[in-house]
Image (cartoon, rainbow, N blue to C red; front, top):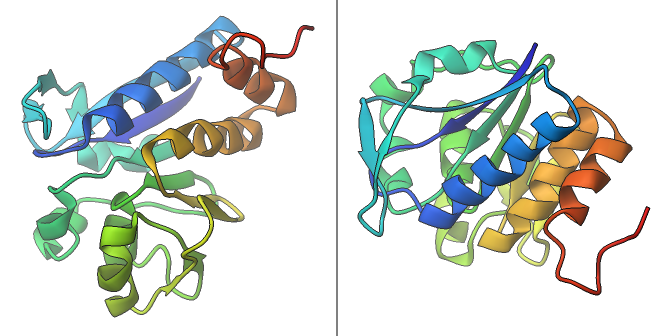
Length: 190
């Protein structure tokens, strides 16, 4: 059984969590041995738009996931500096795919996952990521290094999830997922 954990928190960006949730759950259409969970520090977390979302696990379980996806949102601004929060993670990029959307890269930076690497994030978080000593690629929506990926701009989640699924499974599964959400006229007929 392979698994993905989507890390949410209060004041997360709605589309980041819900788009990743939808795309990752589509993997089950190809691989019934795949599980996706929403994880956080509380039983419920509230999005930036006010949706209360029930979590399915605690962030300490992220160490067991094959893929860990960090959402973005205003809530990242305090979490990436919160040592108590960060210490609950025990991630290993040698055996896990670790990725973030937009300001979720700040949490990766706070965890030390991006040390010595380049990364991207939403433009409003460029300076904060640079202050963590991370070299920011300001003109790319996707930056990857081995098992670590960062993306910028909510719709870049499609490319980020595609990259992660290709690493976790294969090109065929990745293409299937992306094809299932392409606008009509842009999908590839198999």
